[in-house]
Image (cartoon, rainbow, N blue to C red; front, side, top):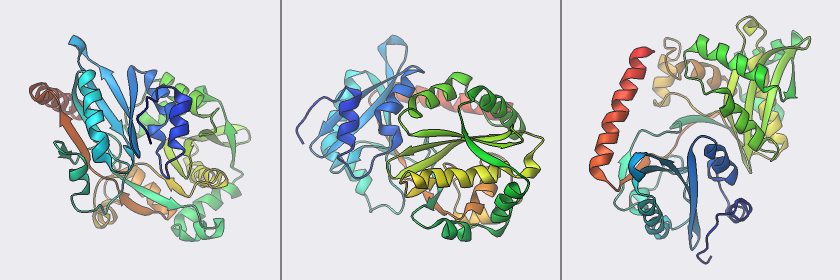
Length: 338
């Protein structure tokens, strides 16, 4: 590949098609989505590697830079100088890179790819997840689930619960508010989910699934799809109908939806970052953080997987240290309020 600017969205997505693996968070659609909330994007390419970097403007002409689920391709060490040049031109305090890789990782491969970067174990995107192999038949997928999960799917069907595609974002958001209050997690505003749906659904990369009984919505699930992978990002249910098990049916229907579109992997997107032995030992006694969703997600028969760590380059070390202190205090305040 020759060096070239890929600022046009169509050109960028066409470039990505030439690589065997790319993530939704590196697509032009994701840059458009983040632009709705104050982020800008820029793209770089060198030989057989490329990356889309997001920037958040700060006062005094500064910014922070974030490279989620990239770079793409091979020989990243040849791309890194161009990424550094880009970040310095945008006066970034620091850049955080979160590669689209899963453990086990080759010894020192990432450290060598990111010279001058610091390894960071805490990531913005969930570090640990459950991956489900969709290349199996539906019968095999069901057989791999926990017996109780299969039972709950069948129970929902027996009770008359059905799943359908929906575009009722207002109802979805009301149910998200109910779920957030019940389960104690932070909620984005309505525009966040609306923009995500309106950007990705016309591209065939998103669906809002609704579980209903007698035309009454019981639960929602928003699933995303890109090439060979699908992700469960957002889910909601009401307080009155949980005994009908609509969320179990929705997960199954989301897997079927993704499989029908050619996805080979369904990513349940986020469980506690603990070894599997700890997860299995403690999930019945803990409900804080992501522990509650682990109890639900483990039943669908996937493989617990852990992504690569983050790598951080500080272009203004003192300002980066100040930013770390600010972020730690802000998080402490959120923890105290929860």
